[in-house]
Length: 113
Length: 119
Picture 1 (tube, chains in turn green, purple):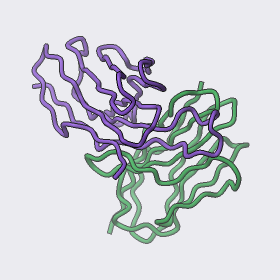
Picture 2 (cartoon, chains in turn blue, brown; picture 1 turned 90 degrees about the horizontal axis):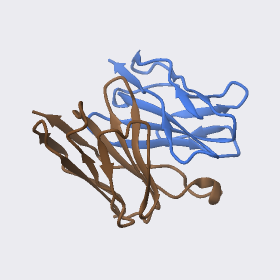
Picture 3 (cartoon, chains in turn blue, yellow; picture 1 turned 90 degrees about the vertical axis):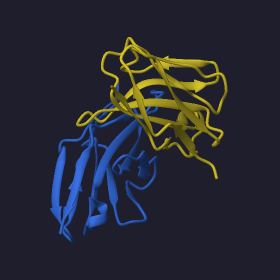
């Protein structure tokens, strides 16, 4: 079975500060990993994904995540956040044997002026 | 434009009523999913379908039903048996299981959601 743990439910951070949103997964087989972002009363939008190859993946708006197989982690980072990054962020995993995405409980990122 | 559409955006239901939430996609995706979102609980899978005329229960299927008569449509019915239906419902679609299509885009695309409120 696969599972995803997002340890922080709320992360407040000041504008232009760095941020890390943590994600750990549990799966005994190879995995595909995703970060989604959700703005209020909207659906989820894909932020970035890891399928294979380079363990560091980047989004177009400055976020990056690193796949760490030994620590079963896929933490999301941004060196300098903006007010517009305020949203809820979900980590998700799809293992090779599973047939559906499993999501973490989400992390609300609030960027303060 | 290709995408996934949920309707209505807001829905009110009286206790004891069944209601159906619509989900349509024109992405030619094989797989479709329904999730329920409650504050602080993330997304929980209700039902999913990997192919037309086939669907599987997710983690919280009780009180819900689905059908998959067409590839592009996956409606969700919230029945009167669902004791706490007030929530935000999200529909998603993706290609079939990626282990059969290595290298293909594997992410799920989401609709904008339907907020269901019992009154």
